[in-house]
Image (tube, rainbow, N blue to C red; front, side):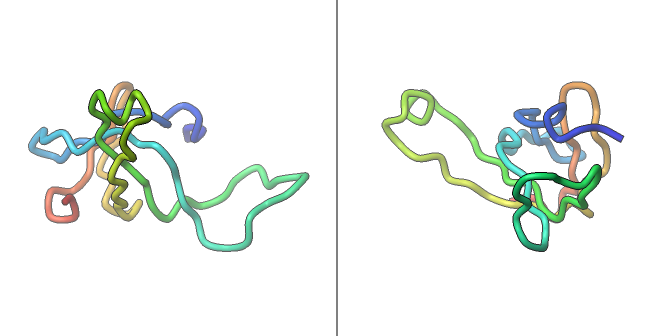
Length: 88
């Protein structure tokens, strides 16, 4: 099991290798945690986006998209592989 900090900013690609963007956030159901947190919490969605030069410079907001966590096929050292049909 990996920590979210280990997969944040990894490339998100489809099974056929199409680059979708980078993982920039994770979402889970339930109330936000404050103070003490649980050791584990289920992630429901990955938020990803593409970052061009304007987004990197802060001149334009990146278009964020989400993909359900159950669409993830593999989490590799340098990328997150997702099902082709769910991507877009």
